[in-house]
Image 1 (cartoon, rainbow over the protein chains, first blue to last red):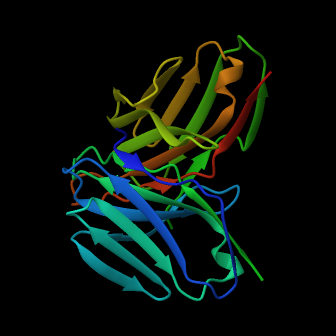
Image 2 (cartoon, helix red, strand yellow):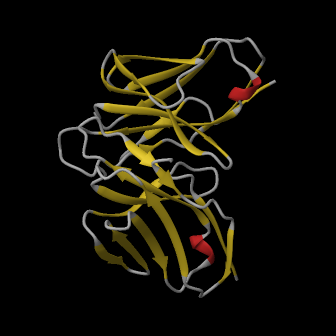
Length: 112
Length: 115
């Protein structure tokens, strides 16, 4: 079983839709749960992170973690064409080496 | 402003050539990483380094080596390039010892084509 599973999509939605992106993981040692956003021809950038189970909101974005089910989600409300990108989940074991464990990424297109 | 730069955006090499990909960060970060990114496979870690002259294998080190002679510079070396090494290569860095999460800062990537 892979440590991180993420459906690569692609996902195509109309502007204004609510988007749900998900990852599952198997490693109980993961402590931080992160979402990166990668625009075409760019490197990934951190979008948001959470530490514990529950929700964290940042504008139109909500990150949700369910540690008991080993499942994380990213919700995008009122999606915009500028949200079109690849979204990668990432996990941190808290090691000082700073290594992260990434999902495959989900490619999202929001059309006007 | 945080900055990770990579020596080339696009590179075309022939099979069997020795290829050097350079990465420089200006943030005084201890940790540096090399990934390759392929459609459907996502980001896969090749090698990482947590200090000058120190390195650790990632998930797919075969066919690659690395060099870190200075803190700010991390090089990825393809000893004898093969067509299955055609990919997008991404470099990243992050600091250590400041507490999780260890956000990684990525460069823009090098698109390598081996013919």
